[in-house]
Length: 151
Image (cartoon, rainbow, N blue to C red; front, top):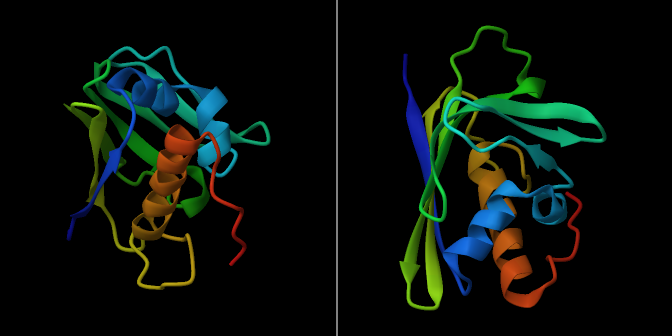
């Protein structure tokens, strides 16, 4: 089986504490993550879910949780219709650089179809994650998200 990964790096003018809160609080995720709320108790082994309009869209299990440094969990997208598929794994590393945080997102164990070679879509992890993290960066740095885009 051909597994692959997607890595995205951005630099955000914020603190590790504020970035951690934005990654783990629905107060923030609903603003920058396409309206998704996030729910977990943020302990290793705990479930994590993303929901939109009261329906779970993505879920997983926390593998590593080191506040303000690293968060990693398995990831299953409900809408792909593939039952029994091995989950992928998403990891956020927060590296403090004075008044900036380097955020490294690594999404591993990807399957065919997880990456979409199209420029005019948010479909595929390689298109969705940059949009989500750009929106997160804008929110933390300016207090506003980017204008809604419809494609």
